[in-house]
Length: 242
Ligand SMILES: C[S@@+](CC[C@H](N)C(=O)[O-])C[C@H]1O[C@@H](n2cnc3c(N)ncnc32)[C@H](O)[C@@H]1O
Image 1 (cartoon, protein in one colour):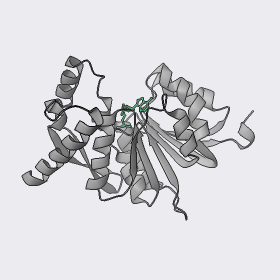
Image 2: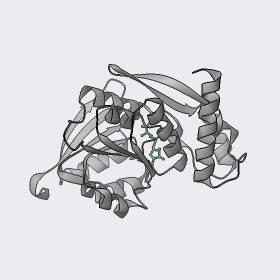
Image 3: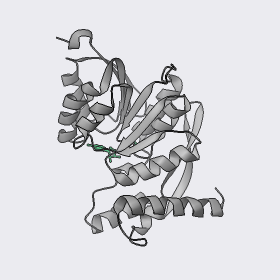
Image 4: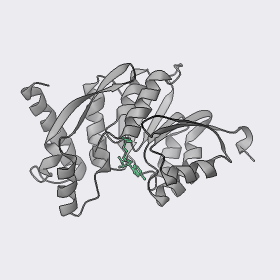
């Protein structure tokens, strides 16, 4: 991207991040605005993401300010794997377009691919910064989607009211016990009867526990990849399972 394009992108991000964080201009951590635009190959497609250039520096600055670790700010293998799986097996087209919800979207790669295939996408993350970056990624890839700051533990009922969704996407989000427990309670309520939950995960213990408990309400098809990421496709069992 040319220097003037990058400057405009930084200015736009700064404006959005200032509004979301409700801090005066100039109080954002420098590493948050030291961004790059990178190309990623996801199966047969290419997409661009905007991300902080040095994640460790952002983590350092956020830690110094007493803020959480910015897990959202890296392109994790699971997010890219989920995006690639959406290229290989796109969300089925329909009229009206299928409704897709991404939880913990981070930089937004799966949402970009789902929006490209014509779905009505809502990309969400509990970290407001993530949502600003995902919104810019969607724009850079010239696709239209909605974004929202949503922590599913805090705003679960509001999400249920927005549903049901045809497809729920989540990549590498089951890394805390609290997330697993909330997901087990909430996620089945986000999907319609013929909905599908598509998860990607680096085979964390939390996901193993989630899947073991979810088998009572979902059919589960899992596929392990060479890079250590596993893709799981869950569909509600008719009648709600045993
Ligand atoms: C390891 S990162 C993965 C980001 C992205 N999905 C990817 O694979 O590149 C985990 C993401 O989940 C988000 N997250 C974790 N717990 C969440 C919750 N309860 N509600 C919403 N987002 C959450 C974090 O903010 C972060 O963006």
